[in-house]
Image (tube, one colour):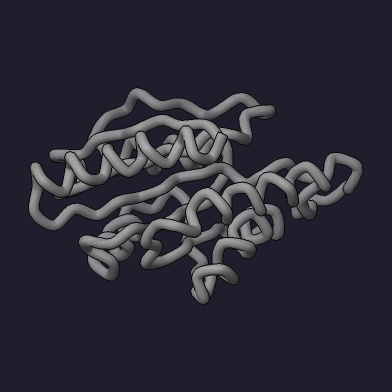
Length: 166
């Protein structure tokens, strides 16, 4: 499964690099499955969520990752911690649904690859902001396997989205 995903991702990046100068790549993901039995607003990942987080780390380990951003919730941080450990990176917090946060990410890591983990409503918002459109809406509650790869030359312009599942 992972090998099937790597070739399309690789080709997507190569064609964009050949066609554009300095592109910034965003990999947008929703947190993995949360523990539903916990009665809290900040649950940990479930066993299935922990397995998915490890699969994500394995999938993204081969490519360049310049930065990893997470909302300050356990489930989002736990989703990207295995990747952060593999890459030797610190998970950075960001404020959701603030355009200036997206601008800061682009300014700090222009030309790099930024992994952003969020929620069913915040990831579509970020995609719309990067692409300069209003066509992506919150995901269904059970959607945990989407990976959106967005390449950006300039926010809202020359941006492309590749939609994958893992």
